[in-house]
Image (tube, rainbow, N blue to C red):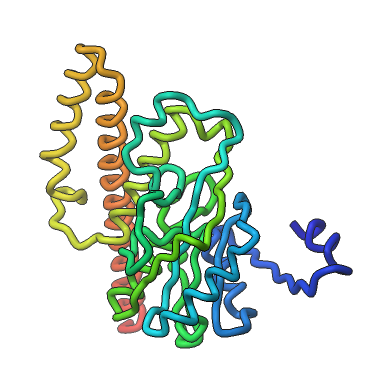
Length: 274
């Protein structure tokens, strides 16, 4: 990355910073310390923006003064033609971070604001808001949903999100992402992120109570689909099952981390008393 930035030194007024901690959100928070202007725009390294992307985004921001968060359209750019089974995926958002082409311009729910095409008024970050470093890309094992967690948190605090479909980018979908194994692994990460964003649920033995009902249900659906050769139903049930698995994994991780923190707190209190 440093070499690529250096190659543009004579053409663009770039300023770079280094963040030694592993994790996308550590890097984002470091970058936010250097941000200038009234609007902070986010995208990804595998995105191809439309030539009018920022112009359209700026127009939406200037005409919607009561909104703090802005989302644009994210369309696919396939490295190779997608396989037929891709149609079995009902919602492309969690899998490939793509917006629904039929989504109308207007107010939008937090979970439909995607990192490849997102902007936030800089005044929000000037108030001290930062990304949660416990979620988002960090090595090979992480709960996904970095930008979603931020937007959900902001909307709970009274901010509003607006979707502008004319400000668009294309998200590059690599050929290695077009396998069922990759998609089903994604389901686990998505489930982990879903639990971390909304962890306030009744737990049994450290996992959400409803999983004791829903996991066996999905296993039964998978068995019926397998016996009857319904490949689409089988794949969809495996996606749902892995999402639930991800929620269970993250619930246990958070529960374990909470117990360790309590143990350290009690240990510290004991030393202070001595």
